[in-house]
Length: 415
Image (cartoon, rainbow, N blue to C red):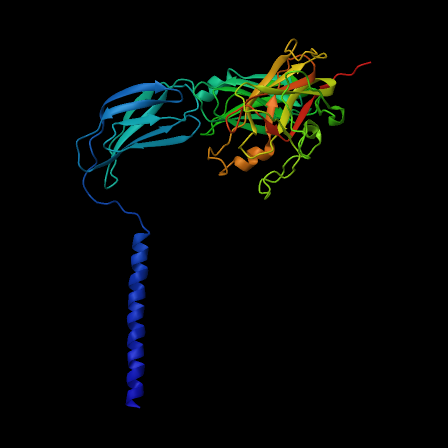
């Protein structure tokens, strides 16, 4: 019995010790979850001095002399706009510069500069007034140009600073309610973008710009009628081979020019065969560095808006990479010359990941599956005949392979 009681006592002692350890552990965890200054006490550092201001778009660059204080943790700048937005910026003691950015206007603005100690004691503020230049989105807004385009609304703009912006198109109903249609996100220097999928009816539109600090521009209003657009009937497409055109494989069952408009092309980037649909067009002959081209009769005359070219190989081999699309309104010269032909567009297929052949990364599959979307100017004449001229393929010469070509626009009715 004594041995039994001894065992119970030992177990109780062990439980008691575990309880003490757990309480200490919990207390310790509680301490580490709370942030405290590295030191306590002391007084606030002296303020910065010798402040200089360089005004910039939507802000300013402030340079200054920080106090010589080993207890200085950082320099802080705060801005509160008239609308109630609050901005805070920090600099280390070793960087005597703070860049103010993200302000939504060119109005004069007070900046409060503080020095802060390791104990989070803050000096009295030094107040400076900055005079920001127009923020980028205001400059871009002044350049906006809207016009009717095939299937939608075309937007042109200049964004010299390459600021990251969202440009939103809204429709306005008869009760003057705005409905957001879509937002185009961009940082390009010269913008040319078309919102598509709109009906060819007169519509009131509104456009505004938002930057990454959620500053908004004024709103541009316009009334436009999107141009009618449809996919051209591929059953009317015909092969047209003229003197000087590239030679096409004729010994392979799955290679012919007519497969460019049969509707078949790879729609699964993970397909084991890599190409989804085996039918394609491929040129043959000796390797050349001079441009090679093929000719197609669309079988109808149309005001073309854009084209989509779908690829066969996946960023390699003879797959067309850099190329031009040319058009001709009337029957082209029988001798194969370029008389009466006009250049409609030039395009390059980009591999988003930039990885070498047979290696793929983010964006490669999506880009390949979407195909090359090539836009045509509204100022081009009506077109019936097409030439596709290869300037370079993915292996470095000018032979070409691709799987499908689709054209969109407004067919011109003939009596």
